[in-house]
Image (cartoon, rainbow, N blue to C red; front, side):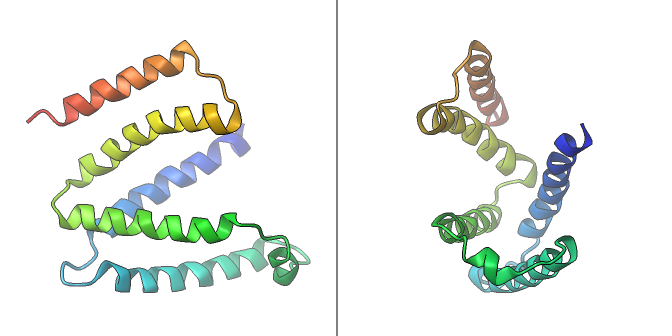
Amino acid sequence: MFNYVWPLGLVVLSNVFYQICAKSVPEGMNPLASLTITYLIGAAASVILYYVLNKDANIITEYSKVNWAPFVLGIVIVGLEVGYIYAYKAGWPVSTAQIVQAAILAVILIFVGYFLYRENITWNKIGGILVCLVGLGMINIK
C-alpha cells in the first residue's frame, strides 16, 4: 500500500511548493530567465539522485534507451512552468488557478485515456466530468 500512496503524496507536497514558488517569482524577472535557474538545479538534483538511488548506475547506458518522450516532456514542462508563472503575474489567485486547470485537465484526460490507451469511460467518470464542470462554474461565481 505504501508503494502505491507515497508517489502521490510526493506529487501533492511538491505541487504545494511548486505553486508557492511559481507565484513567488519576482514580478520584474522574466519567467524564462527564472526557468534557466530552475532547470539547472533540477538537472543537478536529477543526476545526484540517479547515482544515489541506483547501485551500479551508468547514465550513458540509460541515455542509450531514450525515445521521443523525454524531449517532448522537456518542452511540455517549460510550457507548464511558463503558463503558471504568467497566470500568476496576470492576477490568478494561487487558490484558484491550479484548481481550474486540474478540473479541465481531468475532463480532457478521461478522453485521452479512452482514445489513446483504451481505458473505459464509466458512469463514475461521466459523473466526475459533471462534478468538475459544476465545480468550475462555482469557483468562477463572484
